[in-house]
Amino acid sequence: MKLLKKDFKIAKDLLFTISSNLVMQVALHLIIYPLITRFYGEDTTGEILYFIGIVYIIPQAVGTSLNNVRLTTRKIKDTSNGDYAGILVSMSALTGTVCFLIGYISSDKPFFSILFALFSIIYAIRMYAQVEFRLKLDFRGYFIYYTIVSIGYLIGFIFYILTGTWIVIFLTGELMAIGYSLWKGNIFKAELPTGQTRFLYKTIIMILLSILIRDGITQFDKVILRVMISAESVTYYNALSLIGKSAQMLINPVNTLILTYLSAKDSKLGRTFFKKFLLCCFGVGGILLLFCQVATPVYIRLFYNNFYEKVISYGFLVNSGLIVGFISMFFTALILSQGKTKLYMTIQIIWGLCYLIPLYFFIKNYGIIGLAWITLIANCIKLFVSLVISRNLIVNCEERRIFDNRR
Image (cartoon, rainbow, N blue to C red; front, side):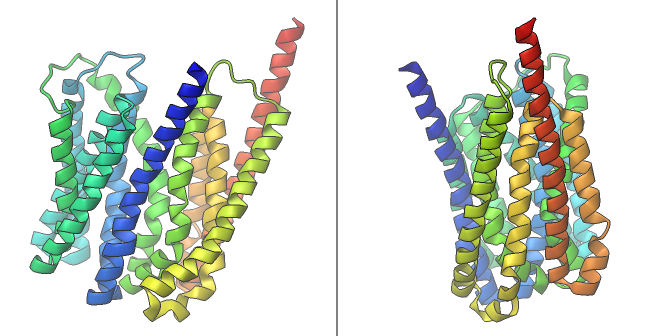
């Protein structure tokens, strides 16, 4: 009975987590971005997506790393809000400075650059603030938190129409969510530091680097296309890849469960498990690819009909590259669950180099289709490497267990 109750809670939490991401995806990609494209044009949408891509790389990495460190270190260190307050202030200030420079270089507008820096700071704080609900395992609160962000974006869109400044769309949602966190939680409550700041800085920097690699590559398409081709091309690729990238919101919660259950001391992994795991991963990947192939043309026809004919022929190539990448995430999660953090980091670095080194040549010569090809090639390499390594880890784990039993 207890086991059934636990399984039900896990399923409910998984549903709340997926729904949290889904609400935001609907607000942004089914309402806000299509409306901006319709009324202000593809160039405006592409410009916004470029700057949002920057936010999803740097401030998001800062907020997420603090969030994850607070979760993972609570078992080994007693920390307080005071330990994280100073780190949050210093790293947010650094984030704001970097984003101000990027904003100024990209737009040459001081006022916009200040607003962009402010937005980046608030976004990093909001990403950290969601740890309030994760610490308490309050995934219903987590869902409400993201729903408030999404409602704030919709309200902010009205402010955008009135002011002509697109940043107010996101500032409204982020500030509303932080306000909810202040009202419901206590992670911003004043507390004295416990003296763990140095340890936390070291831990945060390691996780920050890993997240920067992951999110940097995931969001780099928005940046590189705007820099090398045009803001319009960012809108095209975003529409093509949206359904495929949305599959990631299903994969991230599943990866969390993989890490949780396979890292347990009593988990028994072997060849039979790996065969089932392999079959499930590729089965899910095949289903997602089929879904993307059906949904992508429908989505573009409904929301971006004006450039449907220009981009739809690239759909299968774009979706294939993304789905192969998402399948590889299952195997890297399996590797990480066995405590192989250096191995995991090495795979991420190899993947990053395979993606970034030839990227300039491919985009310069082939445009969007070049980006799609290099994404597919790099993700195939990552999948192959992670699959081979994870299989060897499982085989070694099984052989070690058999040897221990014989003793």
